[in-house]
Image (tube, rainbow, N blue to C red):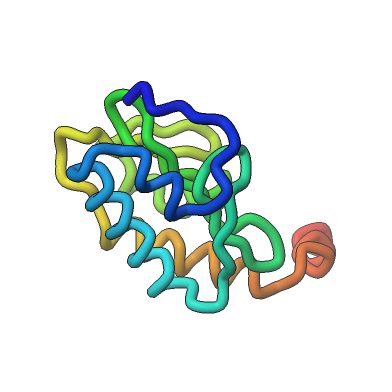
Length: 131
Protein backbone atom coordinates (compact mmCIF):
# COMPACT_ATOMS: atom_id res chain seq x y z
CA UNK A 1 0.00 0.00 0.00
CA UNK A 2 1.65 3.17 -1.10
CA UNK A 3 -1.34 5.20 0.04
CA UNK A 4 0.75 7.35 2.38
CA UNK A 5 -0.98 10.69 2.47
CA UNK A 6 -0.26 13.44 4.92
CA UNK A 7 -2.98 15.41 6.56
CA UNK A 8 -5.84 12.94 7.09
CA UNK A 9 -8.59 14.73 8.98
CA UNK A 10 -10.87 11.79 9.79
CA UNK A 11 -10.97 8.02 9.95
CA UNK A 12 -13.47 8.06 7.09
CA UNK A 13 -10.97 9.92 4.92
CA UNK A 14 -8.18 7.53 5.92
CA UNK A 15 -10.23 4.43 5.09
CA UNK A 16 -11.47 5.89 1.80
CA UNK A 17 -7.87 6.23 0.58
CA UNK A 18 -7.48 2.44 0.21
CA UNK A 19 -8.82 -0.14 -2.25
CA UNK A 20 -12.27 -1.58 -1.49
CA UNK A 21 -11.02 -4.90 -0.07
CA UNK A 22 -8.80 -3.06 2.42
CA UNK A 23 -11.58 -0.57 3.21
CA UNK A 24 -13.83 -3.48 4.22
CA UNK A 25 -11.22 -4.82 6.64
CA UNK A 26 -10.63 -1.37 8.09
CA UNK A 27 -14.36 -0.72 8.52
CA UNK A 28 -14.73 -4.04 10.34
CA UNK A 29 -11.77 -3.25 12.61
CA UNK A 30 -13.32 0.13 13.33
CA UNK A 31 -16.69 -1.47 14.18
CA UNK A 32 -15.06 -4.06 16.44
CA UNK A 33 -13.14 -1.35 18.31
CA UNK A 34 -16.29 0.78 18.60
CA UNK A 35 -18.17 -2.22 20.04
CA UNK A 36 -15.45 -2.89 22.63
CA UNK A 37 -14.98 0.77 23.56
CA UNK A 38 -18.29 2.55 22.99
CA UNK A 39 -17.32 5.69 24.93
CA UNK A 40 -14.05 6.22 23.08
CA UNK A 41 -13.77 9.07 20.61
CA UNK A 42 -12.27 8.75 17.16
CA UNK A 43 -9.46 10.90 15.85
CA UNK A 44 -6.39 10.83 13.66
CA UNK A 45 -3.16 10.71 15.64
CA UNK A 46 0.26 10.08 14.10
CA UNK A 47 -1.66 9.93 10.78
CA UNK A 48 -3.43 6.77 11.98
CA UNK A 49 -7.01 6.05 12.99
CA UNK A 50 -7.03 6.33 16.77
CA UNK A 51 -9.55 5.66 19.50
CA UNK A 52 -9.14 7.84 22.57
CA UNK A 53 -10.45 7.57 26.14
CA UNK A 54 -8.40 9.19 28.91
CA UNK A 55 -5.47 8.83 26.52
CA UNK A 56 -4.85 6.87 23.36
CA UNK A 57 -6.62 3.52 23.50
CA UNK A 58 -5.63 1.85 20.21
CA UNK A 59 -4.42 2.86 16.76
CA UNK A 60 -4.46 0.93 13.49
CA UNK A 61 -2.84 1.54 10.13
CA UNK A 62 -2.33 -0.10 6.76
CA UNK A 63 1.19 -0.98 5.70
CA UNK A 64 2.33 -2.63 2.49
CA UNK A 65 1.69 -6.22 3.60
CA UNK A 66 -0.16 -5.93 6.89
CA UNK A 67 -2.44 -3.94 9.11
CA UNK A 68 -0.63 -2.65 12.15
CA UNK A 69 -2.60 -2.67 15.40
CA UNK A 70 -1.17 -0.55 18.20
CA UNK A 71 -2.73 -1.24 21.62
CA UNK A 72 0.21 0.03 23.71
CA UNK A 73 2.72 -2.30 25.36
CA UNK A 74 0.22 -3.47 27.98
CA UNK A 75 -2.14 -4.79 25.31
CA UNK A 76 0.66 -6.70 23.60
CA UNK A 77 1.99 -8.09 26.88
CA UNK A 78 -1.40 -9.17 28.21
CA UNK A 79 -2.28 -11.05 25.00
CA UNK A 80 1.20 -12.33 24.15
CA UNK A 81 0.08 -15.97 23.88
CA UNK A 82 -2.80 -15.14 21.52
CA UNK A 83 -0.49 -12.92 19.47
CA UNK A 84 2.32 -15.49 19.25
CA UNK A 85 1.54 -16.37 15.61
CA UNK A 86 1.89 -12.72 14.56
CA UNK A 87 4.88 -10.43 14.37
CA UNK A 88 4.81 -8.11 17.38
CA UNK A 89 6.95 -5.44 18.97
CA UNK A 90 6.71 -3.53 22.24
CA UNK A 91 3.40 -1.86 21.39
CA UNK A 92 2.33 -3.25 18.02
CA UNK A 93 1.02 -6.33 16.26
CA UNK A 94 1.10 -7.00 12.52
CA UNK A 95 -1.87 -8.74 10.93
CA UNK A 96 -0.89 -9.86 7.40
CA UNK A 97 -3.28 -8.78 4.66
CA UNK A 98 -3.16 -12.25 3.09
CA UNK A 99 -4.46 -13.96 6.27
CA UNK A 100 -7.79 -13.57 8.06
CA UNK A 101 -7.83 -10.57 10.40
CA UNK A 102 -8.35 -11.73 14.03
CA UNK A 103 -11.32 -9.47 14.74
CA UNK A 104 -12.26 -11.25 17.98
CA UNK A 105 -8.71 -10.81 19.29
CA UNK A 106 -8.80 -7.12 18.34
CA UNK A 107 -12.09 -6.84 20.24
CA UNK A 108 -10.66 -8.49 23.36
CA UNK A 109 -7.46 -6.42 23.31
CA UNK A 110 -9.47 -3.23 22.87
CA UNK A 111 -11.80 -4.21 25.74
CA UNK A 112 -8.73 -4.77 27.92
CA UNK A 113 -7.28 -1.38 26.97
CA UNK A 114 -10.70 0.22 27.51
CA UNK A 115 -10.80 -1.08 31.08
CA UNK A 116 -7.23 0.12 31.62
CA UNK A 117 -8.03 3.60 30.38
CA UNK A 118 -11.14 3.96 32.52
CA UNK A 119 -8.67 4.53 35.35
CA UNK A 120 -7.04 7.96 34.86
CA UNK A 121 -3.29 7.80 34.15
CA UNK A 122 -2.47 9.59 37.40
CA UNK A 123 -4.19 6.86 39.43
CA UNK A 124 -2.66 4.08 37.31
CA UNK A 125 0.81 5.41 38.14
CA UNK A 126 0.02 5.56 41.85
CA UNK A 127 -1.45 2.04 41.82
CA UNK A 128 1.54 0.61 39.97
CA UNK A 129 4.10 2.36 42.19
CA UNK A 130 2.40 1.03 45.37
CA UNK A 131 2.78 -2.62 44.32
